Amino acid sequence: MTRSLKLYIAGLVGASALALVITSLAFGLNRHIAFGFWGPPSTPTETEVVLGLGFWTAVTLFASALPVPMPRGMLVSVSIAPILASAYLGGPAAGAFVALIGSTEMRELRGRIPWYGTLANHAGVVIPTVAAGLLIELLGRHQALLVDFAALLVASIAYFGLNVVIVSVLLALRTGQPVRRLLVGDTRNFAASLVGLAPISWLMGQMYVVAWWAALLFALPLYTTRLAYHNFIEMREMFTQTITALAGAVDKRDPYTSKHSWRVKE
Image (cartoon, rainbow, N blue to C red; front, side, top):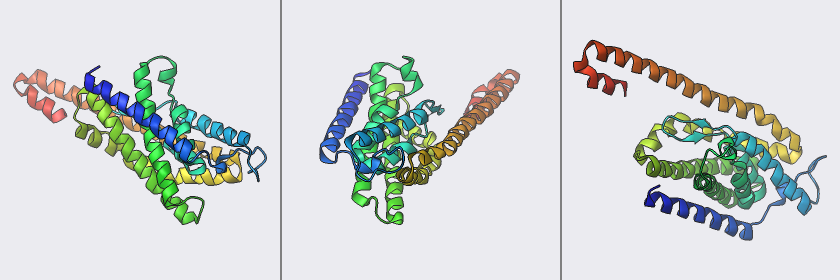
């Protein structure tokens, strides 16, 4: 690991820890996130607020468990929906706690990622979540439906943009790829669909206030979105392998044009 990568990871982790502490002290946990088994509690207790935090953490864990790898190294999951919903309901501190624990992947549990990689991955989710939560607080929350929806949409764009920049710089330092190539190459494949999950986040939050189990009904659209990412990558890989085989066949027939065939393939 290079010195610049070490410094970047240390700064990233430190910034996420500082953001978590500051938001916890400044905002605490909003009681809209309280979990009521038989319906929304009229006077939420601390236990019900903690249970609500646990509920959204569990939902995020399922959404983050199996991310889809992109061609240049990025990982895409649909966890943005429950993370933003938790920030909308409980504030930036609640969203940060949910993002910190809920962004755990199966690869981390199986020991396939070094500890510093795990810290960097979680920090790269916590910081955008705090930023999104602060935007929701600033633009208005639990007011008119249109204001609520617009605030969550702006927050989702901020979350996505900040997360992509953090991850792109991290990958660039680790793999040597240009940051611009990472930003443009992988992001254009899933940017619109991820930001498009903002309405689902908003609806999950609205339904949770009515009945907690209603928020779980959105598991199906989240799963189909994840499946669409996976199928897209599979089709892309099949197409790339086909073009590679064709370029190899041309090279064998006329080695003089081999470099040209490879450039055309790229």
